[in-house]
Length: 493
Figure 1 (tube, one colour):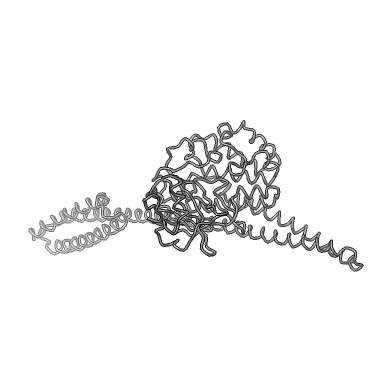
Figure 2: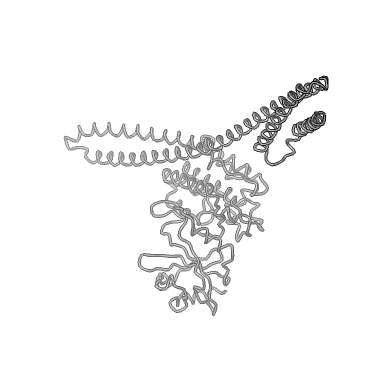
């Protein structure tokens, strides 16, 4: 499909649009020219109707809306997340060069790419630190929901006007439901990806973000510590700190050596670099483990401690500022420093906002720890229940073994009585009758106990009657013996 054919249909959108959803929309123009963005094998245009905006994505290849994209669209439609925009498919939407094309659409997000935001604010350490924390929260959400974006980079993450983050470009998404089922459309930007992934011929995987997430997070943390890194390493629209060539021999790269010096005074950055060094030594990105930076409970606890320290420092600063106000109030009565007082009040307001933000972070981290501990308690309870069941089964087996020993004793007693019966004179009919009746009653009792024991074994071990063989064969044997005795006695009498 030629780009000129698509452009012609967009320029005459009212005539060539054959769908329903955007019948009232028109393409955005800038000085009579319709802007167009390319990416993900699509040409993207901005459609407008009143205050509503959508990205309208026309594929270069006709009807390249395959099963993978349909699965992704279905999964996204059922997903409730602050990190994804509304996304959908309209079949037979646009007529291009005589062909009706299936088109995808996405809610248009007003804001900046994360690369543009960094370019405008890299000199503000606080904003860079907050951006790093927001990015970490985004990655944690993806991991907890078994989702990978597949192409995390400086142009696929948006910073909205309220400074919240949002992911765009869903051509490489992977959910756990479809992991390993489809081939990758793209391995992502090389400056953010593990070298093994760039070899191609990969299946989609929820592990696709493990490497790029750590690369981006390290870049943001380092920039919050030293804004000069931007001029030396960053390239908006291409990379952040790292380039693809750095990953092939990361320990000897220029950027690693520079960051290692910075990390001498920051244990947190030192730990992140150590993880990235380990990642680069692994031959296959599918063998990577989730970075403990994003999931570790211990790290959450450290985050809480750091946040509390920063909060306490800000509270101390606030106290100092309030002391300044008290002093200025005295001087201001003479009309000398009212402007200074206003500046200090503004400073205190800013401190209050930062303290409130830190308290919110602390509460979020505490909730994360509580959720993880609840899961650990649930697993422990399951293991304890399994132990109780096993202990109960062992106790039942011991009781049945004791019953079997008692029945053997009864068998020996009956045998003794039979021997005694043989010694009685044939003329003593009354004694023979008494012994015979005693034997009959004991055999009947023995039969009832034998059936009860079988029922207990069946309830404990299931319908496998072979488990009864160690006792039932002996019981049946001596019962058969005494039935013979009864018959002989009857004949004698």
